[in-house]
Image 1 (cartoon, rainbow over the protein chains, first blue to last red):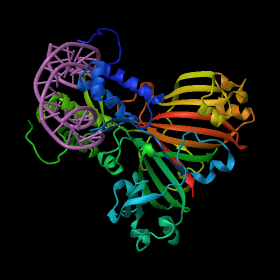
Image 2 (cartoon, each protein chain N blue to C red):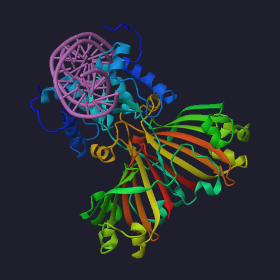
Image 3 (cartoon, helix red, strand yellow):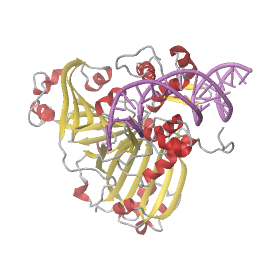
Image 4 (cartoon, each protein chain N blue to C red):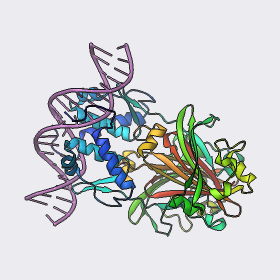
Length: 250
Length: 250
DNA sequence: AAGTGGTCTAGACCACTCA
DNA sequence: GAGTGGTCTAGACCACTTA
């Protein structure tokens, strides 16, 4: 029996989560602060362990808290990297406006943690865009400050890039776009499709994502000025690590 | 006692979730199909109710399944709307490439469900961008097929738009941008900052989001050709309802 | 060694949906 | 009315972290 038989009040675990969330969003509890643990919540609110866990699970699934086993549950932080797409007209050129979200713009170096280059048969989706059944695939993981932040998989029509450095781990100065230019196929136009969703388990593993962190999935297709698709790049970004910025004209 | 005392196997609830996820991602279980419920999982795997719930919670939090109370747990669908930003160079003009993600491009009409117009003091963030302490605020909710898909809040420097139709519910033909043009302040350049995160509870409520659905948060700032900021628009999108597309040149 | 979160059992009552 | 998910209790054992 609980002592509140009536009304449409939210369940106990929600009320507790709401209270903690308010303290986080108000700034009373800050980055890395420890939240009251399961035992504390049980004692404070006279509830069972499962109910206390349920309350904490709400915040964890919202990405506001991170559990550290054997230690406690902590307030999560958000310190994103600013990623510029469509930078033809960077804001600095035409306005003095301030960015809305804080982000590290300083050039922290990206490192490639993992790299895999292979010749593969294209999936139906990739084949449909690149108009090619065989593709060279470059899979890599990027990290900043030794924290993984992005997975990227690039596909190239095999018959176009065969024999170039694109098919080898080291693509040389300027990277794959320079090599495409060498081949007479400089990318001139781009399309990015952007989605957000919860990560698959292997993505959580590769990006070391805590529960409650969505990913941003970007598919970028590069075309030559003639409209020939030369690269399809599937990226999966830790949403807590990125702010995407797009600048454009009316 | 369970009968598997050794090894580093994942816990039961994860194994069950993994199995169901595989059946969803493989296409064996499709949009709207019913998953085995709590009772079925308890019987099939000889587990307690809480464990069965935990397995289903994994899929729900991943956005792959939606619980319908009194009915069952169902496979979730993804049929997004394509939202074009940076459309100066639409792909149709320079390429025949196919889109990677399916999306309804056909012009399903947006309706404004809720609308609120008010004169307010700007928050520090908004004031910093718009360089104005007082702002006219337009809050609205957009729906497609009577399903809420987006929340949008636009801010305008009060001293610039005072007396115009921007301060009234009906902004007239062409909307707020036409009115800004009337005022000699046509928006010419835009910056969009894009993030993804889990929704706050009130956003879940207003957008009717099931658990496991992130939101895409966009802040768009509009500038005149002179670099004067004239609008700041904060949007919150149901990530299951949208694919963002940005086209641009090298 | 004490405390923490992670997993699991075995019950219970409720509100809701659907035939 | 039978079945479903939603909430909650009261235990248990484990692996891990911290001191």
